[in-house]
Length: 504
Image 1: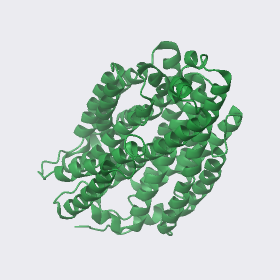
Image 2 (image 1 turned 60 degrees about the horizontal axis):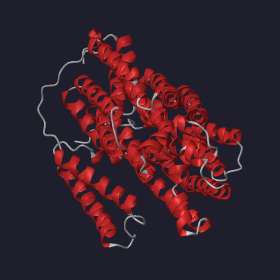
Image 3 (image 1 turned 180 degrees about the vertical axis):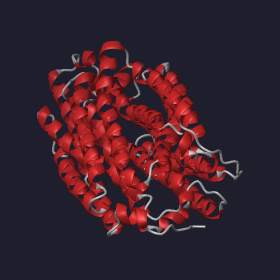
Image 4 (image 1 turned 120 degrees about the vertical axis):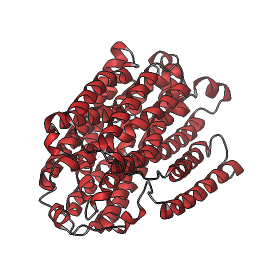
């Protein structure tokens, strides 16, 4: 890239807006979802509004990372913006849950280009000593979007129309497009290489098989049924085929050689786990506020915002300290904070005060935020320049796949627990048929139709099912700790000074 021609200020501003828009979409939708479900129905498909976006992003992320390594960042970043904006417009125009899920997948393809390429460009245009500061800035913008998202989603939902949670992306995306188009210059790479489309298809098949098995198991089909066993078996077969293809592909979408580096491996696995942790809070706290407290989208946003403020604060702090302490030591503090806060969230019930939930969410955010900075930098520990784009895309890839699988697994846990509790407290078939739909708890007008004793039991069951999700989520930071310890004494100084390795 010809750095002398790049307008750094315009480029950074465009990247920040692009990241803000893509990150905003992950939280602005959360507070609107209870209202959307109330309008479209199909409570059981709620997780797929998140999963469709994430699956598409998971598959697209490594592809765009590899393409940007081969042909340059700019064209694919702009392409990602265009696809994302098209998906946003279509989501806003959706007329039913099926359309919304499909258009969210289109959005995810665009998001799969925007987020990883933001960080790849930063590593292109800034020297090593400035990258920690810039990653802290970008992490703060990610956190800021997370704060603004719940509030904006709540405002649009309660005062205008939930469709504006998608339409708001259009003006932001257009400005980002103009700044990048005018400010970012790079030397085009004309070298033709073969794209690993087989690997991409097998990766998508692997993830979809697993998620359909988890989503359908125990509800549509019994866990021991031929259909579910077949889906799990297909997942294993596709995974083996994917790893085989990646091993021999000339230009694999995932360079398996990178995983020989233990710091890189630890960063990816930990990003996966942190992605699942964050999605649990962003998805179930809004449902808790609206379903248990009977609040509006605005009140749900106000409860989710403290977590995102914690993310911002932690990200900024992480950007300042990542160059002074070992990666391992910073993340161990994060893990302790997460274990304690998730354990406390696992104790909430229908009688828990809202301010207590708010405090717990603040600490979850503090535990999560620093990971955006540390894992983005640790990922490049000893990685060759030719793998830089692919490596940075891997952090987003594994965080997103963690969120995708996390929201599905937690959705199964929460739904099964809620179904069990409702069947125990509402045993009369006619009453269960009339009042046993948890979707009704998200609609204030319908809640008023419940007999008081039934409503109390339903609310209690919903609260317990969400607390059950957080009880399970405590396991994730504990597993992350085992991998963080593998980072040893790696830090920014050593990462920057280490001899470049070749994985060819």
